[in-house]
Image 1 (cartoon, helix red, strand yellow):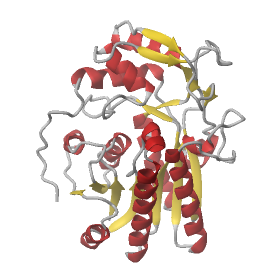
Image 2 (cartoon, rainbow, N blue to C red):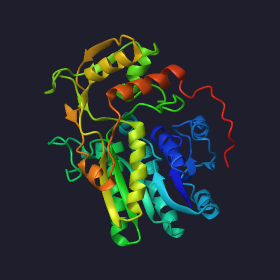
Image 3 (cartoon, rainbow, N blue to C red):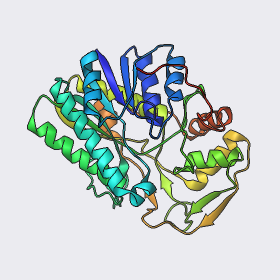
Image 4 (tube, rainbow, N blue to C red):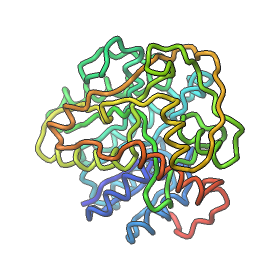
Length: 345
């Protein structure tokens, strides 16, 4: 029996594939490589010293997806695949609604057709919108404020309705906070397409000389140093949370929602300072105006995941920055220019 990983070539997906393989699980990856690189999967196989089937195809290709289910005994699905850039979603909302909602619908229909009822869905803390209390618990009201977040919110509702409709379904929704870092080998990491949307890869590209300086959006928030505070979690801790959740679904019926975060926040200036220490480089920055929709602080209450999954984040800010820097130095152009050696199915 195998785990189907959709979007397995992506940042979080590739790290989760490594952890699954290291635990001895068989995996199958489906990815259309629209915002990822096939080289990541070659490196996953290299790190884990195990090969696995890879299908380069879109989840909305129903017949191609049915072929994957026919050819493999699939016991569960981890669903990472989807468009994910907040800014792009504002410019191209229909693209996001079509791709993210329709691909998930097709996946769930195909799972049902083949009698596969265990699903982990990759959601996001963006579903909380503008929370009025910190730390954020799973019971907090949700109200995403951009099209990307709204697609996550809509899919969550769809999955809740699905679980209510048929007791055979066992579904977990994992709400990520701010994944950062890279695998300790430096072989896989975050490889943003174009200008980085997230803080740490932006800082890393400044440190390596690709970008001039970090723009710090706002220094007048009600935080210790006035800059925005976020819950940064090492991507390997996040990946290991998926394994713990799979174990949970072996025993638990129905639908379950978990925050995956550390429970504490770091400010933008704290992250810059930590990265300077990890890299030995000075990180130039400038203070800019606040961005519309940004909030001063956002961090998780991970108590439910700690209690019910037996999971907690163990890697601190120093390790997050050191691993991100190791990846950046070893791969200054990301996966660009790499030649994949594994032939996809």
